[in-house]
Each structure stands twice: as C-alpha cells, then as structure tokens.
Amino acid sequence: MRLRRPEPHTLAGAYAMDAVAGADRARFERHLARCQACALELRGLREATVGLAGAVAAEPPAAMIGQALAAAARTRQLPPVTSQATARRTRRGSRDGGARPAPVPGRAMLPRLALALAAVFLAAAAASGTVALHAEHRLGADQQGDQAVAQVLNAPDAVMLTARITAGGTATVVMSRRDRSVVFTTAGLPPMTGARCYQLWLMGPSGDRSAGMLPEPRQGMTSPVIASGLAAGDWVGLTVEPAGGSPRPTSTPILMLSLPT
Amino acid sequence: MGINDAAPRRGPGASVGQAADVGLEALLGGVARGDHAAFEAVCAWAGSTVFGVVRSVVRDPFQAQEVCQEVLLEVWRCASRFQPGKGSAMAWVTTIAHRRAIDRIRSEHRSAERQLRAVSHVVAYDEVAEMVESRLERERVRRCLGSLTELQRESVTLAYYGGYTFREVAGLLGVPEGTVKTRMRDGLIRLRDCLGAER
Image (cartoon, rainbow over the protein chains, first blue to last red):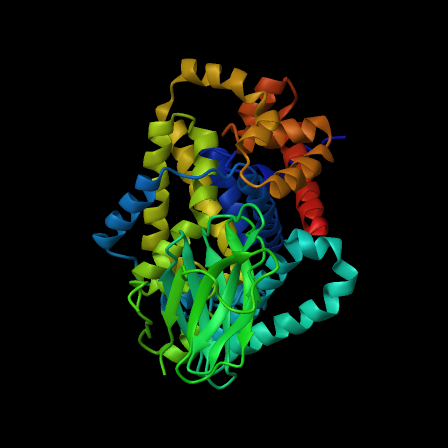
C-alpha cells in the first residue's frame, strides 16, 4: 500500500546525496526546517556518504592545492553567524525545547570541541589495522592513551603548532607544559615503504628520547601519538628509522619543531 | 635549526583555544580565524577525498580541478559557519564537494552528454575498486556496499557517484520513483550502520 502523500522524509536519503532537485528540493527543505527527526537522520546519512567519498579518494594534482592556497590568500572570509542572528532564526524552534541556538565560536564551546576531537581520535585509532587485529588486547591501553590525549587537548596551557614535514605533509602538535606532553599527528605524510618507519623524538638538552613509531596513515593521516616527559629546551623531531625503531635517531630529521617556552 | 619554515604560533586568545585544534574539525576552527597554515593542513588532510568525489561526479579532469578549487575556497570562506555539533568536519567538507560537483553538472544541462554518462555510470560500483587510494578503506566500503541489495546499491552509486537525481535514477533503472527514494534511504542507513560497525 502506498500512501497518497508519502512522508516527505523518505527523501532524506536522496537529499543526503544531492539527488533532489528543483521543487522537490525546496519542498523537502521546508519540511526539514520543521522536522528535527529528519535533521538528525540526515546527519547520520551524511556520515555514510563520507564513506562513499573516502572510497574514491585520489591524489589531486599538486598545483591544484597551491592554487587554492593562493586563492585563499586573496579571498575575504565570511564572519561567523552571531548569537543574535542564530537566536532570531531558532526562536520558533526553541519553544518546544528542541532547537537551541548554535554555540558561538569561542571559549564556551571549547570543552565540547575537545571532546569531539577525542572522539575523532578514538575513531582514527580504532580504524587502524593493527588495532583491529589485536582489538581485545589493546583496548585497555588505547583507552588510557586516548584519555591522555584528551587531557593534553583540554589543558589550560595547551598550544597548537603546525609545521611542514620535509618528506611531505604537515605535522600538527598540541603541547602542554603543565602535562609535560605533546600530542602529535600528521596529514599527508607519504606512506612508508619497506622495512622502515617514522619515529617520533623529543630532542634537547636532556638527550634524544624516543616517543615511539607513528602508526600507518589512514586516509592520509596518522592517529595521534603522545610524547610524555617533555623537558625544557626540547624540540619535537621526526626521523625515518629501520622497522621497529632505533634507540637513537640514525638519520637527518625530516621535521624539527621548536616548542615555545 | 631552520629545517621547518613554520614557527610556533599563538593565535589571539590562544591557550585553550588552540588546545583543541588537532584533527580536521579543530583545524577548521583555525581556518575560521584566518590561519593559513591550518588551511594548508586542511587541504592536505581532505584534498584527496575532495578531489576524488568531484572527479567521480564531474568526470572531465580539467573541470574537476576547477570545481575542487572552488570547494577548497568555499571551505576557506565559510569555515566560520561549520558547527561541530551538527556532524563531522569531513561530512561538512565532502558535502560541499559533492554539492559543488552536482551544481557543475546540473548547470551544464547537456542531455546528450548525460546520456553518455548514464552508460558509464552503470559500472560506478566496480570503479570504486580502481579509484581508491587506500586498500583497507576500499575493502571496507566495498564490503559494505556489497551488503546492500542490488537496487539499493545501484540507487546509491548512481546518485552519489553519478550525480543523478532520484527521478533520473528511477528512469535509468525503470523503477517507480517512490521505490528509488526509499531504496536510497534504506541503502544509506545500511551503509552507515555497516561502516559504523566495522570501525
């Protein structure tokens, strides 16, 4: 049996894939503005399309990124939506207790942002092949590691640093002096071939200390590695080492990042 | 030491503000504040996915590059509009990429070409195998696509990779529009659950 007027939200799947055009689209968007269940469902379906997108990922021509960066440098950005505008837009929705004004970017939303990040890291860690193989054994350790990561991200003195890696890609480091730790991730680092690996170091007056090997990149990024025992004057270094790692760096670092005091 | 050109940065209102800035989601926060290094990291992080999506929909390599640049520029311009509570950062970026690609092909309105594309997109599912960068990811998505019924899978791949509307997909498959609508929704739900379960 088909209803004469089908529930508009059966269109959520098509809409999530931009497969609704013209008047259909306008009608669904009107419905979406009133239907919180639809908005929630749409959010979940969009996450499924991320899988579809990831499945066709392909390295873009190098010049393309460069041109995008150049274009960004001469393009003005949109200001954030202010709380006033948001409140006006959602006033109707908030009456039934459902819709709340979106958080204003700024300090208020940071703890939640950090939590969301920790979730991203959890997903990234859980997605790596190693973890899948030894899931049961490693779960405890991973959870501890993720907690340590979350703690650094939430530290009141945490600072983010970004640097290019000479081998390609970008390193992002979050440092907390209070926790004497840095959290290290990369994006776009070339995958390591053969019996070699990327090894992370704290290097400084207290000597060169290994902070462990980077995991295999997944979707172009490595899940976070935490380096503890940060001492005054330390740099963060990354080298290429034989598989299994070395007690001391044996090659020229492909990243040397000085840390602010 | 001079090996890296990027110096440590502390943005205005640093400390906690910068703390969370790891991962694509938080990098977008940096982009919203006009941080070019964060934007570069976002491009490195999401560039291959954006390019893959756009290329699969637009097809023409030259146009795909153009659209990709539009997408990355939109990420730069609109980063302040990203709301972390409303879905993942990658979903936000890939949604922009897919929508821009769709806008490009729909604005073409060249029906002859679209007929040609119809033929080539019937094999979209198999192409997934060739276009994928990461084997693990490919296997995972392929396995999950494989768990869909044939009609669900065809509806999803024609819509997402082919860029067809649900009405067009219904025409291509010779199936009622209402059926295609529900198959797309059911297919994505199943895909979402499968991808979530395999993580």
